[in-house]
Image 1 (cartoon, rainbow, N blue to C red):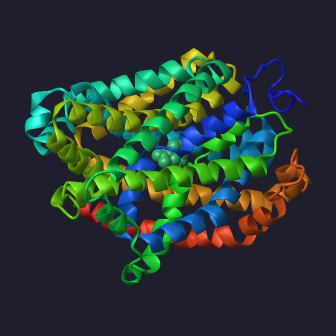
Image 2 (cartoon, rainbow, N blue to C red):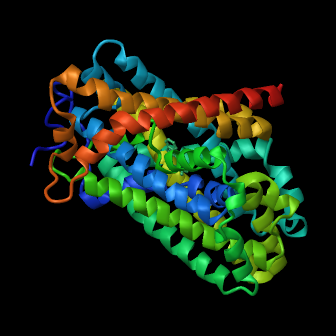
Length: 457
Ligand code: TRP
């Protein structure tokens, strides 16, 4: 086997590498599984017609998400460099600038992602605070903006910095080996509890009952958008993680594993959220109607407060602990994208981590003081960037790779895969289908963005 830093890295630069395949698959799952699965998915599903949407979402993951995962993994493993080095080396010319843009997109996502991570921490921390138990709705509006939010935003970033500073094999890998099993236990435990509540089945029906009436073009957009966001494809997180893989692993198997685990977590999250809402008569209430954030930070806290006592406190700790763990394992990857760029340029890792942490903290300050701005940043703005950059990555592999490098992208996708290989099928989707779909989605996203900017002004 060729070691991870066998080629591509500048002479004399020893690149970090994953200790094991299991380690990097967990890290990729950790990047994928996040607030998108637990906060965003259940809400979008109920808004978009339940079972019909779930089906479209799974189709989007299989047809678009998994080929995009395979694309990013192939590019990163091939270049053995950060996103900037990857596009510089494989694309030449000005392509490095696209890589730099990707670093900024990750920094930007982190600026709002970490504020929501900070809210989760506040709930874990203040679960025993009487202000919460007396009035959960009022409590949320007392902590969702302001100096306390900013303080916890700093804590969240500091924890991320603390993990990433130790590197890939000594920081990220050991961290995900603890975080992901913990996430699994918390998630399944809570879902089992929720399903045993009286009235739970009403929630399951609400979640999964197909409502063909709401099916529209927007449903397809929502399904594909959710698939991309949830899998973390489009911003180069997986290019970065794959740059630390040795050349022999089966990337088809890895893509399918990550894709299906991510879908599985989202589906289970639905079995947790809706039974809880139904059991406490919170389905369709104003709290639950305020987007994913309303469900997670208003409706469910009201349910926990109604349960009250030791069990109530325990549930607050478990649910918000779950959100925190999910957010953290994603934010690690949001940070590593930029860190790998600076370390590839010879800057010591700890310096790069601290610098990036400070930039992320700074950009998050406005979000910590204005949840309206946060909504805007997390919604249409992120979607637009994500779909646009996923489009560029798809076109790059589908149309430019062979010409630039004179090598067959399918061979590179299938390298190390014996038996199960998706290279050819994925390549044709990436070349002909996915760019068209992404372009259509991008136009819709820009349209929504223009509307949102209008609303913000
Ligand atoms: N996928 C993560 C989630 O579901 C969020 C995330 C992490 C992400 N890194 C990303 C989304 C890169 C897009 C691109 O919460």
